[in-house]
Length: 314
Image (tube, rainbow, N blue to C red):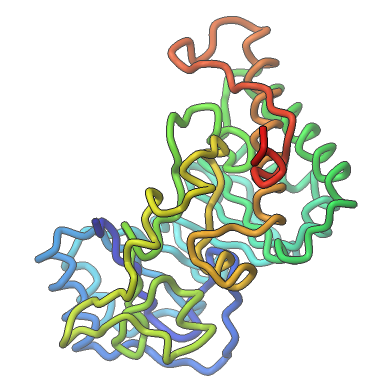
């Protein structure tokens, strides 16, 4: 059941997930389409997330946006103190630490660059309300990188533990989400979330739009029509529905890109998600050494596999 509508305000709107924005040519959504998208969201009781480009919108667009409650996703270059989610692309940025307070920060980075910037991650953890790290080259993750990624997660776990001991517990998608979840919590593209693009058409998520403009699933006139929509539901993902890496993004775009099936994750995604799950287990155990913590949450069980396919005969 749909709950959210993402509205890309421009073809150059910032990315907040695995996909790249593959154009520098600006194209604002038509103002009538923007109004129609908002009207549809109101009728269907959908929560809107507006995704902004790196320039200020015309006043008439800002006036229309203010007609409905929403969340703003903006790049650092266009963020304000009122921005809900601020995106950072790579590591060539500088942010005054007070600017991060009480803000959700999304940083898009390659795995190689992430491993090299642990100090910057520590700063973000200490200041942001929440930190979401999006690794943009998941498809290139190799089994040879398992040890180094696991070590990095362990170091970040120590930083989270240190912050907890000093009185704060940062929210960090790679480590703290799994500690509090009791079921899968994925992006929901095509199931609970749909995207309205600047061309007035609907897409499973922004990644599908940027990959192929012809890959739409409806428009503002005819409504949303998702072929084989059951495949976007967890119940029809036989691997994921039996998995307890509940923090996994379960990106349907990456699924299709890497396995040709939206409901089947790749080996790379599964291994990375399970490394994060296991690091969350270690972090939970270590924090509980300092006293009662999340008493209603059960321990995360120990497992002996990183890819559910490896466990198929167990």
